[in-house]
Length: 265
Image 1: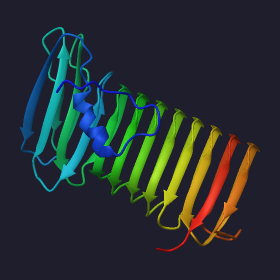
Image 2 (image 1 turned 90 degrees about the vertical axis):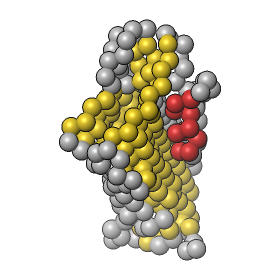
Image 3 (image 1 turned 60 degrees about the vertical axis):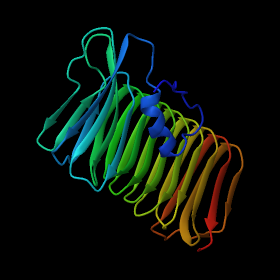
């Protein structure tokens, strides 16, 4: 596993690519690199992440155990970097002095994921709820049955197939929400583009200070609010209804704003 991670500068790739590069990309040239494969027999219900520098990939399967692959870079003997508390798995990308760890985890279906990293990419597939914050790095979520709340200071966010609503926040980064259904979407960034596509009628808030905004929704009636200080605003394929419970709130200070209704398949 010697492939170097290339940090994506645009929108994240599909999660399969992101997850595959998490472990392959953690060769940072600091000290020795060790790979550990562990299996915990406990049916983990929640994963809590913390740490400074490291990548994390989590996917689920119809299993009752939890499989953990760690790639550890160290200049000194590594300390324990994960622990179990009941059915909660705590992982840490810090494993001691001059020691970092990246993870690839296969967990039981429905697992929740939460936590905070200072630097690293996070890739989740088919999880329950997700509540994450990354200071510097990208986040990809491909499939979730619970609410998704994700935030980056510097990095892109992509969320696919969110089935209970999604909230995305970034200071500098592009935001993409694709094929969301079952709840409202709230996507806000200071510098970056915002793209949202929902497959069931719901409220959408999509704001950026500098960038373009595109919102695609099923055709129908919506409250539509567009605000552009410098750029064009276009609304097509939806019926403006000030009494609708579904509100499309689209805003950009510098960029174009587009709302389009998609015909039923």
